[in-house]
Length: 185
Image 1 (cartoon, one colour):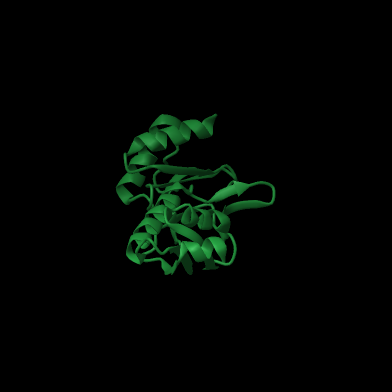
Image 2 (tube, one colour; image 1 turned 90 degrees about the vertical axis):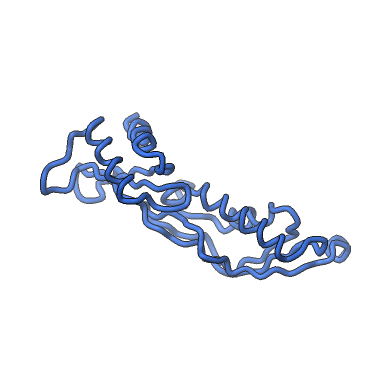
């Protein structure tokens, strides 16, 4: 498939490129294709984008026309920060600081696993990050009993070019719970 070959060229154009998505639905008019690239947790930088476009042009399309946007155009993904608000209930045998470190590591790993443009569940849902997946990333963390997420209230809708990125800080609070209470309560 052409898409697989394009992805391969993008991933080999620069080591910083770790995510690729192809919008082949004529995004800029007839016969146009946009290729969005990013690193594991951030959009691609200008150098990686230029290398990726050059690799694409050399290997496939020879579509670079002076003064015009190419028909197949490589662009960096666009950041969409994961905004979370909620409460994490954890085993009181752990410290809040330890749980916070573990939860944030789990969330960061989850963010890096989300493809550019989110997940697709055709025909009903496309370009989303399910709230349940975010909650599961938290609840699968060692020492966490459960979590209540208030923001977002539903799946995160994304555009084709959006890349979910880590926030400067997560808006989570941490509440210790005795496992005796949790198991018997």
